[in-house]
Image 1 (cartoon, rainbow, N blue to C red):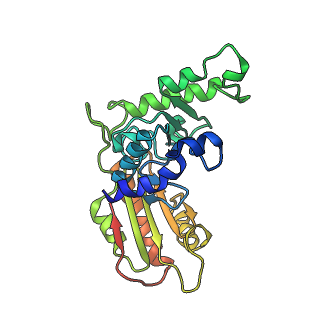
Image 2 (tube, rainbow, N blue to C red; image 1 turned 30 degrees about the vertical axis):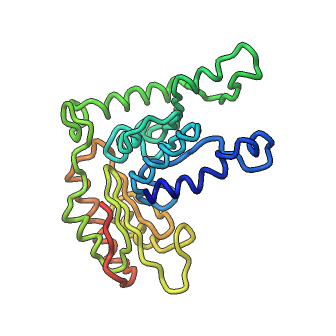
Length: 275
């Protein structure tokens, strides 16, 4: 109820006053666009799926189309083929990339529900979607995508996907995730699908979030151990392949624990784990 009330409070001013909308005298919402379940570049923030499901329901009650940005979260990144399946909804538009080609070459795809697609079917230029890209549907990228999707979706090729299953097997050992969440200096841990992320406590009077450089020393220590990682402000994160073995993920998690010990990030209160 609290989520629904909040959604109504945000959406009603931009969808509810028909006269103001028609007159163009106030802000108008064209669509609801969200990153489902996990906000990637925003700091690997885990969002309550119940909140997002209710937000989608409330937006649709008001006639808004729903767009899911699954560039990061989609295609088994979070342990399911789509992040939308975690919420149990079908968006009107969904965007995919990154794992679409297994990370080999750049390619993105935008999927649209029938009514959205048909709205752009027109013999007149004014009614058509004329935007395109010089490299759209280039054959090398499309061949890579077809191969990647086949490998990721096939239990015979993906050892983490059991026949008939719709969820990847657990990649990150629970005991190592728990140990990571209890490390001094670690404020928050997210372990979901192929993602393992840890947010570090900020130093006194230092920037937080993406403006912070807290994760750089830890990331450097990971590279020294042969683990490719990237800082995201005060967050250090690991992304495994959906086909990676649990042993490989366990070794990477142990390297992260070791990197935190070798590159001290200070002490803080007991960390909260979001798993």
